Length: 371
Ligand code: AGP
Image (cartoon, rainbow, N blue to C red; front, side, top):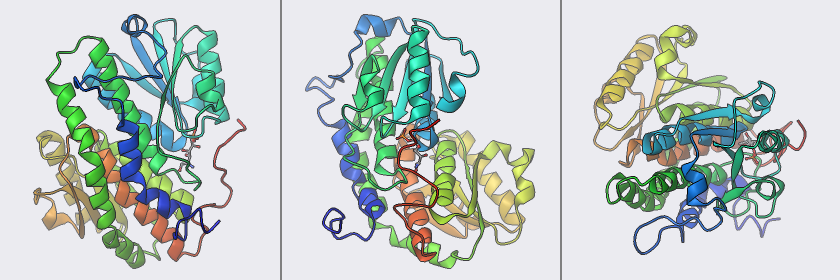
């Protein structure tokens, strides 16, 4: 109803704007006064968690992209090997799991059938299952050994926005918590990352405040039928998410890929005027940053229209960018929390300009309760 939309035309627009709060609420109460993380619904003991020697994240769609981000963060902070798998593939491939495997299921709704079936299978194989979920008391957390709830509030629009950001936050918390349990030296990287996480809501707010730039861009590109998204490291899942949002909402061809793969095929798609979003890693990652800048040059030389998401103060890409979207500076691993936002706004705006139902895209359901 109109009242529930709080003055917004679409739930999705409202939910995009609620993201600073979704991030803040998902962090709320999870850092003690001593600076240590506490995850109250974590029903696995520290001893059990110390037995974990492998993590497999399972999820579908946007939630699986949160899982891809989680892999980078969890492996970096914990040194525990972490795989990410689409829930629909997981149980059909005879995966190697046992008591010391932690299966992490990510689901906004908690009712996605593929994900539910995957955790049932994982528990039959005696793996421990932890879910990251936004819906209290839904099936997936009920059937899990442990849960970290995201506190995004109800997500009504079919396209996930605040759900995704809060899933990434929960993944970061899980990675940092495991590092803490494993006895990572305290006061170092972990507390620094926690401080940086607390700075995210204001940075997301800035991306919202600057949303008119991407809305205008959507108006300029409303007639395009194909879009590419390029990223690497954690920018790769951001590229996948940017493309999925555009497919879901605007019904246009959109593809995200890892920038390093460009020469292995996708560059053949580049032609004059093809819009290409590129997520540039922070400058601190100089090797990655330089490589992606040369990718931007390559596609630009072939006529692509380059829309470059790059942190404040990094001007190295400016000569090769048709449009520069500025991102607040943040550590590389957390960059997806800010870089995703303009891509959501762009997809929503394009859908609206094309006259589509932004909240209920054709052929899609909010939670997919069939396999
Ligand atoms: C996201 O915009 C999609 N509608 C979809 O990919 C969704 O993320 C996926 O179906 C998983 O849903 P869940 O998080 O409720 O399990």
